Image (cartoon, rainbow over all chains, first blue to last red):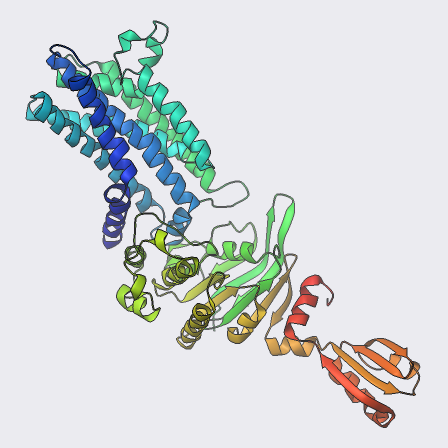
Length: 252
Length: 295
């Protein structure tokens, strides 16, 4: 228990408290975008539903940035620095390490719900019931597991430079075609069906419907679940292959 | 006494390239073993096998009677790798507290920091430390679990002279406390000062295993120089002699069994003038052994 608690404290310090990149890119930037597109770059009255839905979009965007830039780079850097190997050599192994990073990732997503929700309430007077806020937090946390798993998968890229390119190539196109930055209807017709398959679209749509009392779609829920299970299988297989190659070398 | 490490006919290959060939080695509790050899001799591979980072595929290897990498064995092992960990956003004290929490019988972090003279940098971030300071923190991380067996891979690289001296003093204290230590290093004098035995690897094979004294006794390379009127033939068949050359009255005798050759020279000593005897140093022997000159 003590080992787990120390690990949790240790990772919290370096992942959140002393991590300027997370604070800026995952919290300040989405919050800035939210204010920009709901307060600054608008004329006339913005529909209340847009303020709510765009909050959901920015929550998903924050989680995506966090998973594909933050967590992926973090895990890759840890492996390069020999931290994973060090954990592997300790009696508790690497499981607590991944568990702690996973927990903190979820808490990081929670913090984006708190920050963006706070701004939506304070600045745009968004008013939701406690049940809605709870549902939004739950969906944001669990729904983002698929992007988090994608981040874990990307962290196995050998070089930091390659990872950076990969993160850019995946995150921004995915954010655009899944309608996080502007409505999906503005995209070309041929691109919209592809966008609707993205995990970020499914979560965003799910969040928007919960926040606006809309009808929940089973396709959002099943699609999110399918992404999660598929990526979980790919991550488990990849980790096993990478940790123990055929020549018997552990690459932790 | 049951050995802490027992390797029997251990082999390891990277693809078709054999890195370790039939290594048999036994290390008893409380021993300090110097694992020496040139780059690529197989030292780090052997260390990685012992740590469980590489899988044993041929031969046998046991640590504390367990397979390498077994949780019980991990509790008793401390490791100082060649590469220091630079973790962003955390201090020396924080990383040591995390490490201590992983072991059932860990040392007190504050006491350890004090003993290793790291208290002054305890609250500094790892990213702010110099190379030598990081090396000392890596040593502290190896010790914090209060291990019975320590693996130290090139431990003093990057340390300044004072830090090196403090480090070797620490090793002597650990030796007195009965810890078993496996050290790899290129610096023979360092190993010679602390190790009970050495294991010299050459091309993946153990070229020599034993004490320094045994090494010197086994490889008594001697160069004898003198002036004499006696012919070369009088010396060629003496025990241990490998070469005899004569230039005018000056005679050079090379021997691989110094004591035996000198004893055999006793009857003719009266005919020899200006005799000088040069024994090879341990470093010379190491160079010869690693180059395969002595086989």
